[in-house]
Length: 456
Image (cartoon, rainbow, N blue to C red; front, side):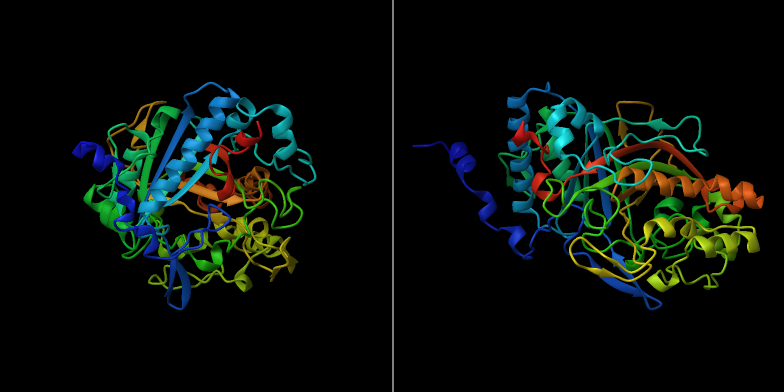
């Protein structure tokens, strides 16, 4: 007769109550679409209610680049993620997971010919034929101490319940984590496959920056407008400011890459991750109007209580109007620096036949606030216990080259020189300090576990 321990181990605890079935969700083809995220309105402007708590884990692979080991790792990681999703619903009330891969993974673990065959490639003049995943670079206004990271893999977990994230991290990466939500798990631990390099945490929700910042004594936090989702006082998740559906994917918007809906990486996207510290005291030395103009554009007139100015396609600013603003006001706003690159400049038909009106955004942000300095844990450098206002920035678009173009515009060195702009009048770059940066490839959900390994 089997022992009690053996009987408990053999019992399928997940079927006692299958939390994942409480909310029936058809998993999207992409990893970046977030099932279950709802919307609300702020003064008539639609805003996505994003998950409250976030954690990012970066790592190097802990096994040699041998085909058998890679394929075994692929099976184990997919089984682990599937087991997590069998217990927690796929949504903000359960857990949302994303797995992305750095350039080093594709260059070290995937044979060159196989990677060359399947990797998305840029079709833009000046970078034509380059992989759509390239190393992150330094930009003109980056600080000298910026770290350009080159990790193999990146996990992003988000949930309305911080304890869900804590349990998933423990079960995936630490040997003692043998249960999820009180249910024993068998396949979830994969920590032996990775050498964790950083753990980064944060949050995104009404009034959380002000509440958490003031309780921690972060200078300037008491000046954050009540209800704001960002340390800088505005909303980060305008529905019209975030790419909808599959618009950020490699293949969706014509002209960026060679990918098609039938490509291996269709439904995948180029991901950027960085940590950025914010000087709140300096930012809030400015009036509401001055902050509004630097966040959006110098024509905005919204009152202080409007934390979510309209971002509908018709409000978009393109190059000609941006240049006119800069010349007229001697100031350029952050949004108008970005919009001619992050939104379609004319009516566009996607690779899937979707018709997009001019001004539709195709770049997606999933950034979140943080008080880390710079991370919760790092094997790569010092971590300070002194809390600091910041953001873990995560963005998705059709190529790393696309992000690079946008980030150069954020510095706007040419505009600054042409119109003699003061540093504080070039978006909000002066108030930021980027500490770490890396580009990743976020595969489609079907290939989230060690992409291309099954073909090696």
